[in-house]
Length: 355
Image (cartoon, rainbow, N blue to C red; front, side):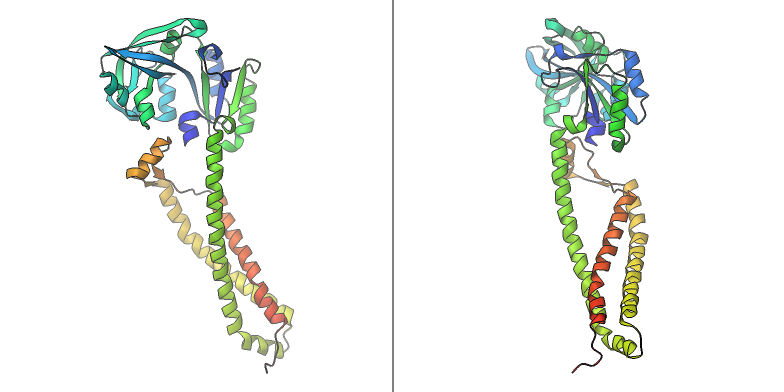
């Protein structure tokens, strides 16, 4: 969710920009190159950006802010920025206005229709200064963004820093993360890699990757504990069935049934019981999973605020990926197979007469 709506799965930057994020390390890209990036297979969204800093001033009040140059159309598709509008109107592609956070508007005591002044540093030491009418007020997902972030159009941002066709970077969201490597290769065939770097999210979002790995490790630990509980439940049932049928087993062996054949028959019975249980579980769980996939659980209160602070929608959607269900089926069948060791050993060592 974070990659798709904020940072992108792939980022393109000029050489040196990642280590020193200054205007002089911005990249150059023409409209034709950006259009070609949009046609790459598996690319969902291409969002060129101009990200810089400036002093924002209104009246006697001044505050340092982040100035983000965006394509309003692309940003609307990428991060749903228009839904955060609380007052005013959204930017058009050729607009010369600015969108500001609600916290910043309160600090500067500025509202829709007022004019905000930016003063900063442009490309190669040029002075960056401009006046931008406030088009709208946004309610951002975090207080830091709400108090210090502004959005203007790409032409306005490029004019502010005096760098036509200049970008701090290009953010690219993909449809299928499994095809990320192939998509990066296609992009590197389009851009000039001698002047530009193409990064995957594994590099740009290393902290997110570490967080995801930690979360996955914790989830796996909980899953293994659940497997242990299920395993003992199945084993307990198998032990009970085996001991209750000792008399039946002795009678069958006494009548001439071979012990290996009897052990095989009991193993098949247990496997059939497990398959019936799995089939019943699928019949119940899959429709429920699909319902919650279409209608995710919506979080409220503190939990919703916590999700929003990370740029994620405050919902709990259910995955319907077939691989998840297949893995659990195979695990249950494997536990059942291991559990059959007990009745097989009991039958092979069964004494026909007990003293």
